Image (cartoon, rainbow, N blue to C red):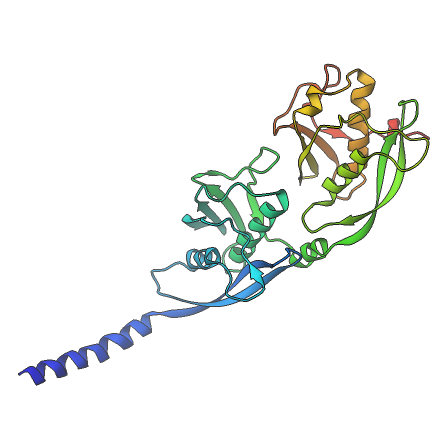
Length: 304
């Protein structure tokens, strides 16, 4: 009798095991990470097993959050981040992450994390855009606005930007009378952790290298917190010292605003500049010039 039961159990296992294997399918997914010095976005292809009741986008993100298996790659996602939910509808993947998906050390780190998530998901058939939520709320960018729907990133272009290259930019500094601004050509190195717009402002804050030009009236202790370009507008976020320690006067205000606006609108893709202080719009800079609306390029301030 015992021998008969043993044979039945063995036969049942032979029947069940192939059935489970038949229900499982294998998919190949691309996960996006960076190399160790963040100079390139690279992919790792991974095979995942799934059943008809499992969703590939969810499995793909869970694999992404586990981190890379390939030596020389590293995750862009903050440690401890969990996937709370993902919903795909009308070719849009709405991803809800835990609040651990915050506290990035800089805008570049945040951008790389977005690239990893968006490109991992848009590699999957049926997904063209990604919306990211944190703890059920829209993920807010450095400008203070939600990122909204994100489309696939051009990795070749991003890797060109990350690799670091020399570029010549045009900076505008006040003349000696502080009546006009004058262009100065300067060669800069585009770094892997900063957008070129941020580097341009940092170079402005260093002051001119050409005789006959003077420094802008940006207070020396004002800190540039972030620069984000969205829909043709550069959101330039300064620390509170920009207002608290400003020299004042309408001319002083314009010799802060015009150099930044005209230097940034020299860059492709930037048509306007919106100033922020600690992430918020301020009505005026020092009591004179309206400061809470985007500024367009001011050709009339350039010395002829």
